[in-house]
Length: 377
Image (cartoon, rainbow, N blue to C red; front, side, top):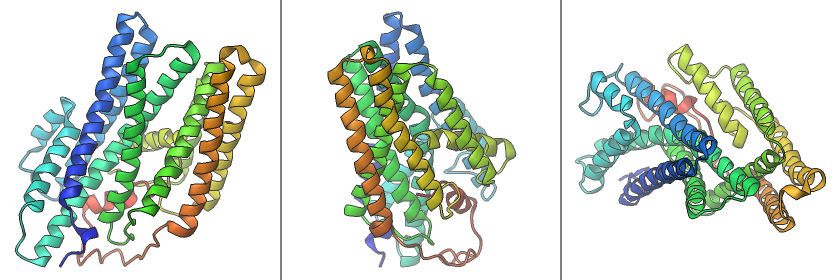
């Protein structure tokens, strides 16, 4: 009999629908907000808001199709569709929705019916987790290419230009929720789909991990927003940070993609992710890298409010500046405390097997290789 952590349950099927809802609402609120800016003749805000939406959509379509194509090297079709049909769907920008459809359709058949044997059941549930993991990887890309930059942009507009509207707050709320959902969903799906990695316990470990990520990301984005309010030349600094992250990823010689061009694009996207939060790029011991990264983040979090307060206090009302500074301080401390607590006491210990013994499979599939080579929590 399958253990509950190895089953794709009805609850997880419903949570997939929740993830789809947050994804759609995040994009919808941003598009409606861009239309509002356009009507107000704020063409710069319109362009930037739409740019982040399109960047997330375009790059996730590229990787989604590339992964389908790689998987087709092992079978003629995916879910009854040819390469041409899948290419057309991705050109129309609905590759992610295609994956949601396939996962929900296959998951529905499994969670409301029973397979005949334990072996068949294990195989079916594992394949569902593999589908969910591919989707969570793409959602992670979309989150840091669209939701996180969008949250930063709207915070900058609200803080620096005193423009507050319900749509702006809705956009920020759904961006924040999408970030939170993508982080936990990706972490849990990845650990379930890799047999050599221990399952992430629910409850306290998940809550502490989520707090660690959300608090550090929130403090970092707020600090970036204050620096942007202080000077738009902060964009140059952010570009430098992105280049450093991309260069570090390149020096680690990642081997995630099946082609050199996609690998370079992947490394550039990881550079964007590292601008907002830390991830283990190659599944190695990164204690020193994490210390350096979060030391740098802490310096930014302390420096940003002080620079605004002493150099240009007229840019923000004192009450607003104090509120934002307190949030940055509390989130920074709480995030670092949760980080230390999680990795010292709550992090699942890995139980690695030989690479050719993956749940009885003699050959690692392309899907398994992709998951093993992706960002590690």
